[in-house]
Image (tube, rainbow, N blue to C red):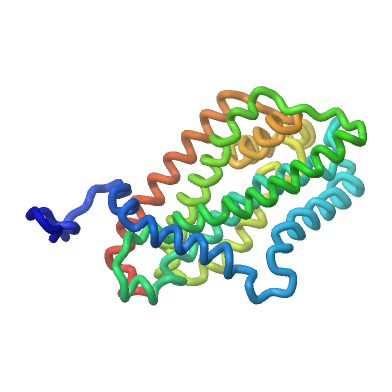
Length: 286
């Protein structure tokens, strides 16, 4: 109990709210959250040869490969935007979502040891993944800005538009989608371990139906019968919106923006419900 009054810090009850994100308790454990975030940033590449340089290498090499395969060999046009910059912009946005999803999808299995010994709000673990990945996203965003000004200096017709003010909302949507899907998958991996293998294959496939290496207009033009698969994918609208506000190219509609925001919030709430229900008895199945 706290000193000077009869209020309990924690109360164990047989039932919890359906949607329970206890901000007060998370704030009480903010120091632990910050500690986990620092640990993720410092130790992830601590025993590697190139260390933090992997933050730069991965998006650059992927952009080069996409440019060679999709733009030079397959001749997919990118308008007035240099193909490399077009791909780098899409990959920068995709990487943040992908890292949030894969980082949170094994929350219960990878933290079973600490969950079984120490009490703290379990939702801190997926939250720290999303926050620490913001650091990586920031580094890759700096790379994008550097190449943006490089091509601008070379004479490319580039100009951001007024949608740049929606940048924080796009980042929030990527975080909510990755967090919601990751928490849901994490709950199922406590019983079905092979889902961890499936997630790697699924994210690779998802990237190609999210308009990362090509513009949405190309799908609508060349494959109209299957274009709906890409068009109804909320990640497509994030990638296209990201390119639109930075490069002033691509497809943007307020309907697509609102639709994506709605799906992101709903998926996050579903993930939170499933996560909260699983944390009660996951230790018996992990």
